[in-house]
Length: 428
Ligand code: HOZ
View 1 (cartoon, rainbow, N blue to C red):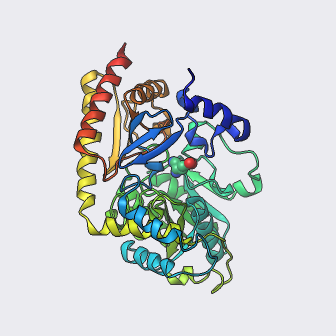
View 2 (cartoon, rainbow, N blue to C red):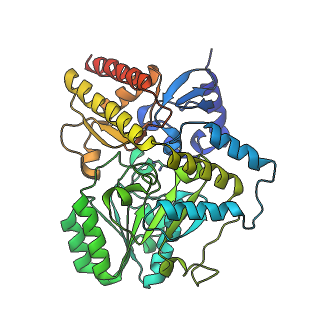
View 3 (cartoon, helix red, strand yellow):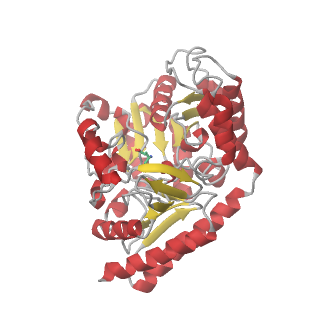
């Protein structure tokens, strides 16, 4: 008998392009159809056929507390009977803004939006508006959502599906985007030597998580800060993934580097649709209605998303979760590296705390070129075997895996046992 996930996928493909509402979910690069999910609690996700998996996707990052965390559920429940959207200010938005300002070192003012894509798109508009310049610098393999200017040499689904550039994005726009190799100061210097006075901003994932996880060279990040200041360009940290993930104040706190603008998303919505961008008042006050740069949204600051996000951030601030996440991250990711080593399978495991990736390669993975040089066939075998052993991973080597506070040592052990079997099977 056909599984319910398969039946639903067949049905979905008739009315939804590719059967999914975001390409990364499709599983094309691992030749598997997506699982349709029924429910999730803590670190366990259950599909519509009743199969349970240990979840390392975590909705692509937001679920740092695990699924259906009691305090997040209670906060949503408390709000929902009071109306789901007003299109008017609420106290929740003020609390959210104050919380973000307290937690993220460089943010003094913040505007809520509905997704990371919107956050990055708006931050770029602000940087262009402030500087009066058109060009932007991004890095190969970094992904900042799907706004036109930012799809050039992008990571995530664009990399997974091998899409070189997207039809529908005008060339006139793309020529204002310079995409450079990550961690490469020389390339950055030459780009600024050539185009410096025309560059409005540098946008970067300080810890890239969309070409798999890449460990940044801290001197490179410092170099970005210095060169942006020297040329009067704005430095934008896209911390949609790393924000509240690697430290309460994100990568900027971890590495002690202050961007001009920061993009946020994922964790601040506690699993509901959200995004935000923020920075110094001198920039943020250029936004309408205070200033002349326009950006808007009917559902921005939505009360349910704010309630879920505030509850998530409150739990994150109360507990000693970060050392626990760090410990679990070390156990999982170094465990994977040593198991693969024992099995004689060359891998590189990159991780920062509770986010990490496994690349099937023997050369250091420092940027998009080295990430793409990893063995896609081996990744496919690994993914398929892990799924059979009850592990729910992102179906692409160009994504991060996430551990939540709900993962237990037993789950990590079970995962490592599954990986040991996967590595063994891969040798046959
Ligand atoms: N940044 C996420 C994956 N890398 C986005 C998820 C999506 O595209 O659906």
